[in-house]
Amino acid sequence: MALLQQAADVAREDCERAQSMAHELSLRLRAAEDRAEKLQGQVKQLEARVEHAEHWLARVYAEIENKFFKQQRPDGKRAAN
Image (cartoon, rainbow, N blue to C red; front, side, top):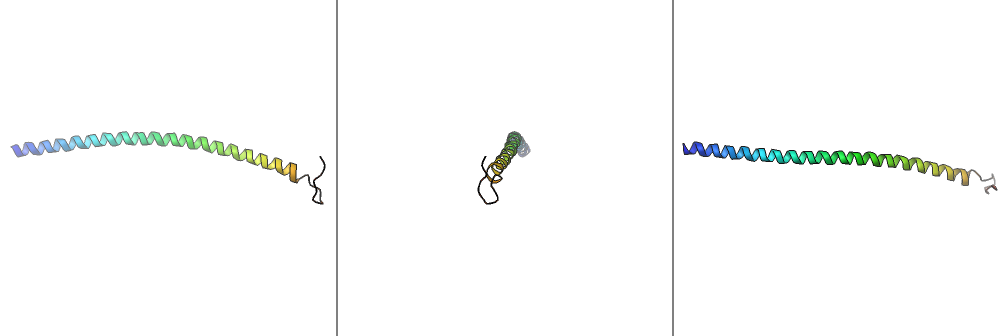
């Protein structure tokens, strides 16, 4: 009978240990999911900033093209403003 009680005690301890580990892993998973969601939000913000910067650079490039390169005469000299 004592051996049966000992086996039951070991089984209960194993079950408690497994439940504790499952709870800990659940908490870690939730924290990782929260972090991933936050990072996805940051990625979207950075993508928007990159798109804005690309449009700005294209505009600056076009202005430089128009002001410095399109105003040159056929002989290679800049035309007077």
